[in-house]
Amino acid sequence: MQLSQPYESPALRKAIGPALRPGGLKLTERAARFCEFATGDRVLDVGCGIGTTAAFLQNHFRAAAVGIDAATLLLAEAQEGYPALPLVRGDGARLPFASGLFSAVFCECVLSLLSNHQKALSEFYRVLRPGGHLVVADLYWRSCGPPDVTPPPAGRGCLAGALTRHGLEQRVANAGFALSLWEDHSEHLKRLAAKLVWDGIPVTDLWCATCRPGSGATGRPGYGLLVCQKRRPPHG
Picture 1 (spheres, rainbow, N blue to C red):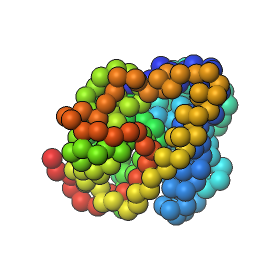
Picture 2 (picture 1 turned 90 degrees about the vertical axis):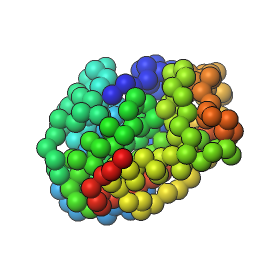
Picture 3 (picture 1 turned 120 degrees about the vertical axis):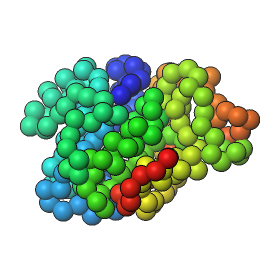
């Protein structure tokens, strides 16, 4: 799981907040309420960073939350802040967990950073129980061009692997998920961009200046929340 180095910048993290993404924990809470967890449900936070989401789900929804991240520095901070929280260093495309173990997988502002979306989604599918939920909150291209465009991996940052809404829905469907919820929350992205500018931090420190939708598509970045369920064997 290749996470972007800017998240380890103290100045950038101070501007973004402990959740390290647009909107903080508001969308996490929205998704958790939508999923209607039962006490003790096992929940995996992929790209857990400093443990904010996993701790929130554990404390506010009584979930048996587990965090996994590839960044040693962030995991060390998570362990210090939440010593009782189960944390694992690992790759989102090779999850070290048994099949069918979790009731939900959260992947917030992480999928666009992974080099192989489909492999990661297949792993999320594998570790979920039947009917389990996948929650994805991430940047996407609000494209006016071809709806299924995948942008080229030009530059670094969150937009380097962002998809269009149609492209993201297609990927999760190919992995065996059925869409339950899609919401646009681009206002959170706008607020974060304005805060970065106010704090004197270039927006390109978070997402790359050279990234474009690709294949002639035009558009601008947005921020979306997707919730889907494990329904059928994957294909594609």
